Image (cartoon, rainbow, N blue to C red; front, side, top):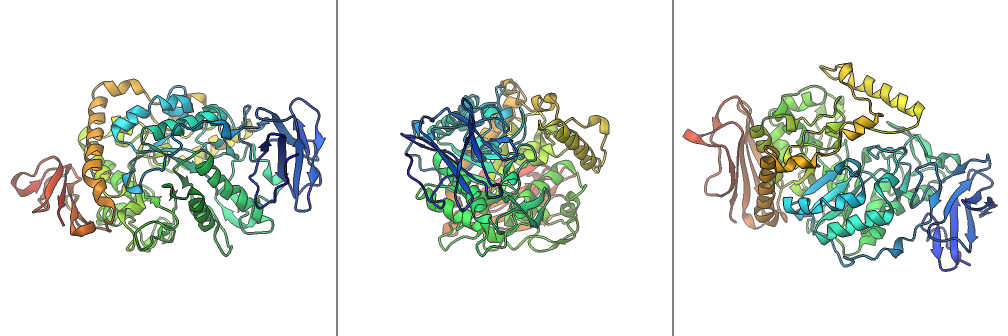
Length: 598
């Protein structure tokens, strides 16, 4: 029989051995649990005093299908299921992850400064929408200059399609994308091309359809409230196994699937009054398990709390590597489109916002933010520019529009190139959204496939939320639950060989080549920049100190309302130019990058 493991040693989910499988479930809120294998009648599981149930099945193994039976007769999947061949309400499948033969088993990752991130949604990245189909596009990304892909959440979610943020089984890659072995093959193929793989994970809430955990375990706590209801119980009675469930999940992705890092969704909504906050423990333990590998931990944090981004004396991250910098998006979006509704208005009123976001990271570093009605952020003084991830498109900023339209793609090529030339060469770590590199026009609207009742609630909620936007037309609102909404988001890959898409692709490829050759070697030791702006003509001058005494210079006119004073750096080697500087002035949408030696 399988040797009994201590709770503190166990990995959630079934334990494989040569003598069968041990099935385990932590269910302290119920007084009995049964095990139902697909090919036999249920049998009782043995209960321990700490609320764990287990059962050894000698003739079970990889491929065995099973569910747990609760006292009320409901059959539920394993919350730590490794694979759900028939979606979140079906049987769980025993998987032998050790059977995959890695071709790049010695991959150690890449230094953070080398990363150019490419956010992708597996279901719409290709027509097939699978892990294996994505492999066929990795050569395109390698030629482009992408060195990391960031996958939107994979935790098994209900239905045929979704963004992944309503996942309920965090250990199981969604079956619509393929099997766990297929995800391993994608990671392996990416590593073979020198591309890291990062994964978006959600530890702030569970989706509403298919989450059975509250029926038998204290998953939620009414001591903390979040936008999704009661917070996850990371600090109350019975919270120990809940914390382990999430932290071991993070370790699971990094170790079993050899992922190069994680992006934690909405960490501001993770509430924890423990002596060691859940986020701190997670970062500490994931880094310890990774050993000498380069593993990068990223946060999305509306509060702009720089405490999570601390560096040690050598400049290395002690907890989280970087944060998605929405402030960069907002200032560049306003510059490109002139949109000033909602929170954009707070950025539009600050004539120094674009300079501060590019030079210092956050625009709000403790100042009062009218849209929020309170102070926001902390100082970035001690942080390098590489502590921030910049972008002009991502799933949120596109999908939270009424029609999911890619605003940047709808602008003039001149403007789009200028904006790209700024953020792709800046010392913050850049992130593209899939298709951006060729100016893809395909929308990326929000889509999901829940049960009938929840679908109706989503349709109503989206209509109410988006109706607050200026110019909202109910006739334009897409049905987020319709298959057609999902299908329209699939990339039209055939466009990349035709103008004007091919021209934009060449431009992006050129920028990333310059980044890797000229900018990346300077990023280790780069410091927060200083800036000057000319609000009358949207001109900006930024200088970043480099290790060894050199400096990186940006001079740009990101406006179309006339000429600006020529504020280009002198005595510097120019590495990129776009536009002109006739008569001592910068023309609209001009961008100049240069480097001064140390």
